[in-house]
Amino acid sequence: MADSRYADDGKVRMSDGSETATVVSNPPGIDEKSVRAYRLERVMAQLVRHDLAGIVLFDPINVRYATGSRNMQVWAMHNAMRYAFIAPDGPVILFDYPGSSHLSDHLETVDEQRPAIGWDFYGRGARNEEHAERWAAEIADLVARHGGENKRLAMDRADLLPLRALMSRGVDVVDGKGVMEIARSVKSDEEIRAMRYSIDVCARSMTRMREVLKPGVRESEMLAILMYENVRLGGEYPETRLLTSGPRTNPWLQETSDRTLEPGDLVAFDTDLVGPFGFFTDVSRTWLVGEDKPSDEQRRLYTLAREQLEQNAELLKPGLGFLEMTEKSWKMPDAYVPNRYAEIVHGAGMAAEYPLVFYPEDVEAFGYDGVFEENMVICVESYIGAVGGREGVKLEQPVVITRDGSQPLCTYPFEDQFH
Image (cartoon, rainbow, N blue to C red; front, side, top):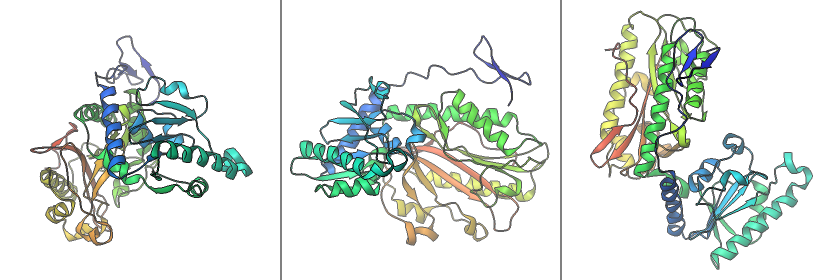
């Protein structure tokens, strides 16, 4: 992937003389203001439904969903230095990293900005409890001011020190994770338009990765091209490193290595990219390395995975229950059950989201019920690999649930050579 040069026509000339797609500098005309308004309304409706005085959001994905504001999103996942307070009827107060307020000045969803108060030991040392008390005093004041007699405050995550300080002030802290998962689960039409664009960028990134698929390339080189293209085309970052080859495709959930691809290997991957507009683009495909035809075993694995994917996608429709889907889902042959994937389907939006539907073998331990709704975006999963088998096949397709059933959101093709 070494030296690249931007040409006058907006294309990238690679060192081998090839070209990639035109650089995307201006995404399509998505009405982001409409998206923000819809999302904030969804959050506030959940606050009313659960009789909450407000919610404090620390998860940067939730902050971005509710406000449209982002700032060092990956860093903020492990540093609690930005958060938001939202009351059912407003206001929306964004507490941001000091010196960052200019990043959100344009957002109509944010009524007020304040500097965040941090208590983490790395930044506050032995004064961490003092700063946690300061944080709690400010939040408790907001609850009293905007909740009146209602002291119920949701939080999507909580560290021990600020939680203890907040509860000592009489605030009834409840779990806010479900509030946000339900709010995020149903998309607006404009969100789905934006998701289609983000997934298209993912498909273009996969296309570029496929162009260099050959013996002698390393797994890590393949993954680097996928990440590079995603960022170049307006995407943001990867959430996982799931691209493996040959015997490293079975069992699944092995991270990318420096293994060199060999002729006849399978290469399986899960993109898990955060693309344009912050959408999670979750697509899996499996490819064959080299010019040889697939083996009978490779054909068998791929055929079963494709069958599982298509049959389960056909089940999805508004009103279908989660447990009902488990019951009606494609029946996996016994040889592959021990290495099954974690779930049959899961929701997707700005991350892997609610709902999640389990295999029959896992329902007693983890399963829960609910109903699929129109405009949910669902990723249909398949992994087929036998215990002790050399390889496995991973496929995944995001779909949107419409009134008539499900429609695929990813246009990247499946492989015909395995038929």
